[in-house]
Length: 392
Image 1 (cartoon, rainbow, N blue to C red):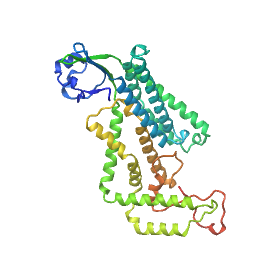
Image 2: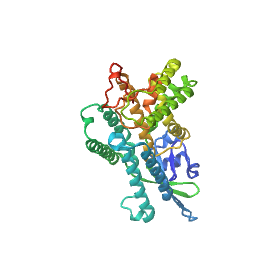
Image 3: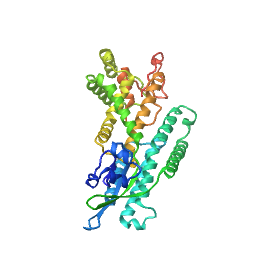
Image 4: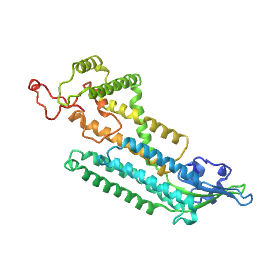
């Protein structure tokens, strides 16, 4: 963080590079052994540095505000791009709650920066420590509730009106945040730590928490995608081109269908399907691999950047790493798994919330048939004995 974060594995400021283990033990008496062996147990946020002799003084509150403001802007953009209908799923509502949580942090840190720490009801250290603990507690219950939400998608409760879904998602989201706040209050001990350099420079720091769950989760997803894709690396470019062709073909068909009461596919479409299925059927990926490819095309850049940050010891506090990027990536993963499981028995299962991944395109990439739904109120006697085709 621009308000300097220090992990026990690497020191990001020259302030601490010359500290001996004895000096560190006197400053941080709880973790001298782990600091010496390289374990990463604590993360410190340095708020200010000064030197009593020279009058040197640096306040990092403005840098803290810039980082939190950037995180808020990024989360807002991702939320607007990925969450179009809030009532459709619990995780979409959670994305909105994270944006609101970021906004709360921006407003508070802005007030501290403008008015000064003396006018603040609670210290910046207290606020950031509890915020990091609360965000750290969010991922696991959000994933659990998200899975439950998708599992009941076909039940009686899922068929309720939009207002019911909104109220249900709001209540569940507030419940998750309430549990996170309770965890934060019960587990967080806020203590200002004064760090002293041998040259006389002092620093005021506070412990903040990072989300190890997010790190393990992203590493797991990243590794799984790599292991699945590497054996088929030579075929991936061809699959991507085919998926792009299918997507473009569907868009063109939708644009050309001026008569909504026509249910017979065009000859050009039939010909394209027959050639595609007959000629390239043996090259088609399995359904699970095809859906994984659809997920990777959207979210692999984010996963790669996060893994690189961790690999280079760029540690992030929980209120930065637990963001809308991660939540929407997780949402896509869960929707993809549900789509894969239910499409085995229901065909191209489409009764799922909107998602940035085009699952129907990659279902078709695997199955080799491009299906579209019949209009609801049309009866064509000449087509009576034909098997119905359902579009995605």
